[in-house]
Image (cartoon, rainbow, N blue to C red; front, top):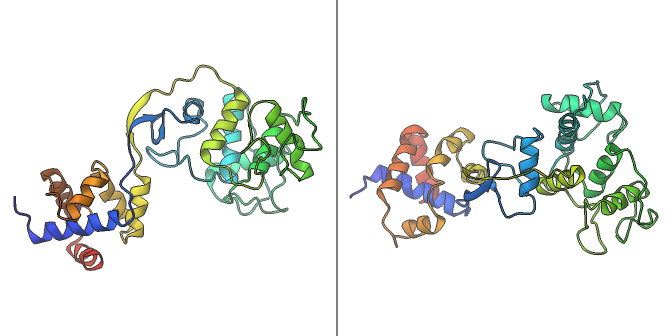
Amino acid sequence: MRRNPRTRSLLSAFLAAVISLTAISTGTANAATGFGDVETDTYYADAVAWMVDAGITTGIEAGCFGPSLDVSRGQVATFLHRLDASLGNEPSSDPHPFGDVVADYQQAPVGWLYSTGLTTGVSSDQFAPRQSITRGDFAVLLWRYAGSPTPTTASSSTGVSFTDVTRAYQRDAIAWMADEGITTGTSSTTFDPDGPVSRAQAAAFLFRFVGPTDVDPAPASVTCTRETRLALQVAGLTAREAACAVPWLTTFELDYLLAVVSDQETASFELIVAAATIGTECLTPSRIADLSRVFL
């Protein structure tokens, strides 16, 4: 089958854009919990499944949990607020003094953290909701939520056996987490209190804290298209164009696309149709020409 120049140009432009960023890798056959980026054999799969069942998370977008992304202070506030509600409590929706908290979904959680004394923010009027939370500060928030219990089996003055825990306000919290089996640290002697907490780690910490026993993360055929969509945006597409285009590309394996763009493989009918559909549905002729000039 001969491809017309317009379709060939569009196809090559898209393949070059995506392949240059090695982003076509998001399809997941063994996904769990409705997220294409959460494999069933990962240490956090049960934790994410529990969070979904308990209403603590809906992910970062359709099909995506973002396990490797840092969890922000605003997200942690929201997780804890929803956790409290899932345990049968009625967390308050009190006001707070933090002018930098603008997301609607974070207003009640941050107000609840403030009114219950779980946080005083990073200053008198700043909470830094978009800032990544550190492992040490996450430990402190969870410990305070648990009622600030005294560690039982380890010396709070030494931060358990974690030699890198040096801040006094974090020692009891981290020692308690170790006592309760919520953490084993990043090694036998380190906790990395200043390191960021990933969303996967946050899920695992909360899951171990609550200790549910009836979680079954059933496999599901789900695709997370976030990385491919972002790659297309970096490559020059607008957010709207990328969101429109990405569903047509994620079913193709990267090795196959590499072979096609290097003329080692003939484009399948399905790939040609995908390129033509993208051109029809997502782009104007001038945008196709722009992409061709950039990537060909």
